[in-house]
Length: 239
Image 1 (cartoon, rainbow, N blue to C red):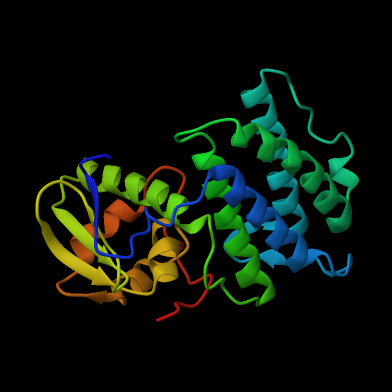
Image 2 (cartoon, rainbow, N blue to C red; image 1 turned 60 degrees about the vertical axis):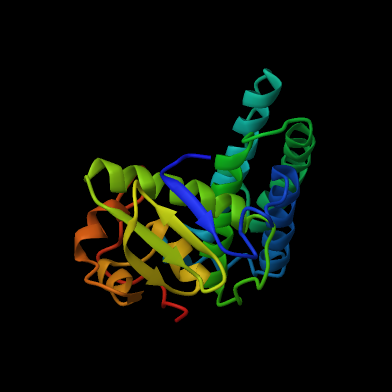
């Protein structure tokens, strides 16, 4: 494990981590269930991805599955040629078909194979849940692995800004992110922490979490990789 990312407490997120193919399969099942009854004329903008509607987001997930097949198999997997004209139902069918191939390829691999793919898919499942007003899952096999990916990226941001370590706590599980002893602890609902790490919470929302000291010095680290806090809220906090 990266020494800049340490987990303590029981039960641990790492201990409940599921294989990537199981996590990816569950994301796909959930999204199909969430959107299979959606009316084609209803294609709202996804607040967490304001440049995308639900259909656009599904097109992204379908394309990501096709690209993953190409990377893992060594053979090019074409994006559905008519994706620009596909509706939500057609895209769900295409993603489910391609996703079955991804599941098989991931099941043949071990270690960190598929981590980024699962993180992207799970993060977008949550985007969809917020967009359609669906409840957040009480338990999800993708959460632990995806959280680790995001926390590792945040740890790189903490290091890049020469910040002291920070402890992120859900109450039962704590992650120390950064080098050395934690200089601050933020305690929050696990989805508040996850969405903060994934660029879905504003600086004000992040600061509004339960910090045991002033949080402002760590705010720059929440902009890392492809993620950056939005200027205005795209979703409410859970706690």
